[in-house]
Length: 211
Image (cartoon, rainbow, N blue to C red; front, side, top):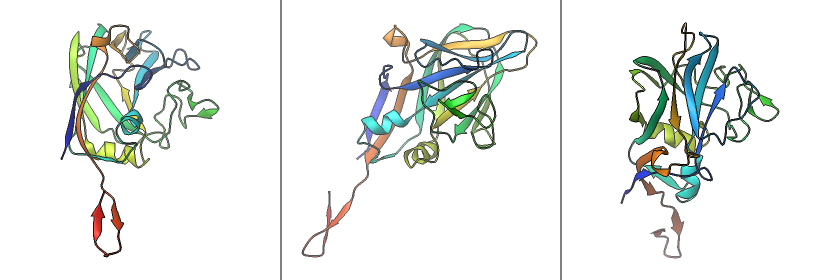
């Protein structure tokens, strides 16, 4: 029987969400209370979100689960001017560390193939989501396929990298609240359904016992 988790808002101790900044390529923002996407500095700077999902498997039965629905990620835009601009979302191949990831490195001492995390060894070449969104103030939903989460569970992917409107001739960026935000109600919300994987154990009668 599927179990539904509705609007769960993990705190910084559990969730994995941060951002990277081309203008500060060695700075880690793992404890930032907001994260920024888009561009700035008259088109010379790029800001990208990084969101991981391993915490879900650690909290819910230590990876022994299967998703029965897509995951809905609701994020609260609280600033910026990224209005009606395209954003892309890529599957991350690197087992990045939230407290260490920067524009240059996916963890300390380990560089992205391409700074900013878009190298062929860093992410899938084709974005999984490409849409025209208006990051106006308020809540916005992103649908994350259950199939992707299953691939995270088995260690093929480790999260999502979001890019926004980069290279624009002016500031075009938006900030959202992270799991570190002091206002609990503004933190990202996760909604999904899952059920445990069942193992079959052999008994003396040679019949399978579901456990």
